[in-house]
Length: 157
Image 1 (cartoon, rainbow, N blue to C red):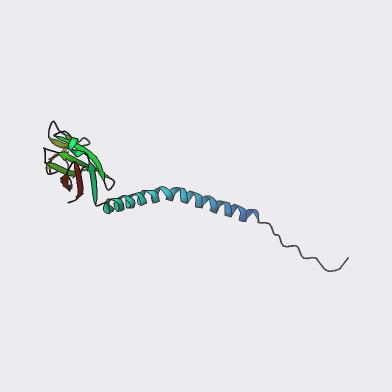
Image 2 (cartoon, rainbow, N blue to C red; image 1 turned 30 degrees about the vertical axis):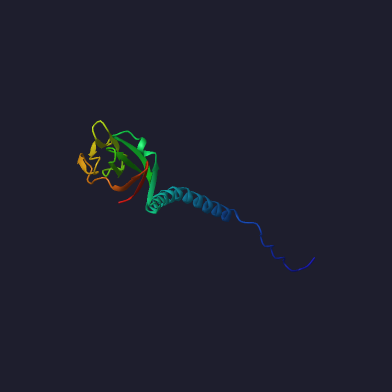
């Protein structure tokens, strides 16, 4: 036996307090990620939609000569709904199908020869997209239409 006092061995295990702090930090990080992910998805989706809308320059629709007169065909342009309206044998109009009031999808009524929004009663002219009555503040956005041999090429106006 020696007369020298022995030094305590360093404790290599983590203390209970440090363990609880690390656990609380990990739980907080998981909670922050769980809250942040939906916000990120919401913002990223809007950015992706805007990018897709700007990237698409034209849409080609086939067999449009089979559409009855008058009638409309719904299609997507840049991820957003649009309408191709057949007024007569060689009379066509393409318009955005997004109501300028609150963004609802509009519909074409061949019986009344009008475009209407079922959400709040907005009515648009099917030939021009002009807002005729109801709450819509602006006309529908038009697209350029070129029809050739049963095929329509719709592009930004």
